Amino acid sequence: MTEEQIRALVRDFAENLNPGEPITPLKPEYTFDEIGVDSMSFVDLLFLLEREHGIEIPDDDLPEITTVGDLVAHVTAR
Image 1: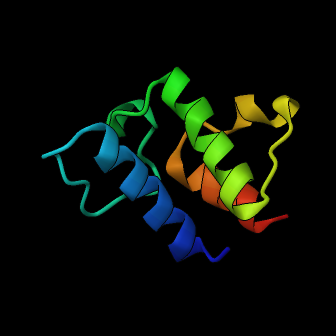
Image 2: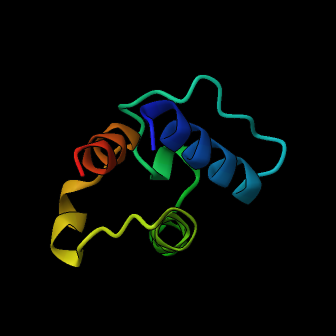
């Protein structure tokens, strides 16, 4: 996945959780809480990445992923 594809997936996911609250632009420094993705929803996002794109993020790496930019960097580095 490209960086833009990851950002689009995250934006769409967050906007589906919070209808009527568009997230434009989606800045890399935004935390998941800031875009309406709580910890349970974050797990759902990770399952979506794995199920639809084959991207698996080890549990040990999760504490390092606190912002949208962290997730993009982590996924593109794989």
